[in-house]
Length: 340
Image (cartoon, rainbow, N blue to C red):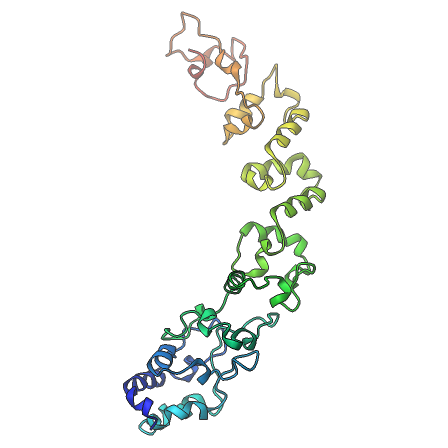
């Protein structure tokens, strides 16, 4: 048996017992989103003092680091241990002649990456990119490298962060695949979510805030139909004014409404019937009037006082509106709120 293996025999016993308990299907899988896989890099790197190239032998020679492609590679260390196990717990039974390993760090086909370029002449160590790989006890999806890992390293080492440095097709002068089909219609919803966990949804990679504003000022959104101009925009503005602010400033709303009265402001809206009173007092949002009337309604503060012979207990509606004229609509509020 390998002398190094003998010194760390207890570690391999623990590892192989765990492998046998979990079963091959739950240990080795090629999918990123698979559950955690039982494989201890800590045991092999720190416990056995194995170099990464012992298993990933192509890292210095080819673009891909490579994995052990046959059982023979693993058996160089495990052969002595397997002799003591039942047949169903030996590596040959668990892995087969051609093991299928988890590859949580596999990149999108569009990515250009060469291990040879990055590790040649000692430029980088494996843990510069695969941080914590030498201390992990199991293979999990959080080992998958992010774009930020690459771009931050490039920035620190003054390497180019141009799109074509790492991507085959994606570049600033050509839209990514996600921008096909109905993207013009759907991009607004994606932009508003500000979800940057998926790079295709990170608008800031190619666009600035000013580019959005410039485009929307030249081409109005599809929702801005004639109905939108007359009525629809009011509902949207009340629901979320910040959405309008992407293109419109507050003064543009004020300027437009100062020149063009809302459609509701017609017929009996003002004097002498003053139906606007009910619109405000019966509205679930009485502050809506202040969108335009920012100075409030000073006339309300000038409500006539009650005659001296009136008292708080009188029922105003027994006379006003029946035998006496009512100067404004009655929405059922207490008259004492204004007249006192």
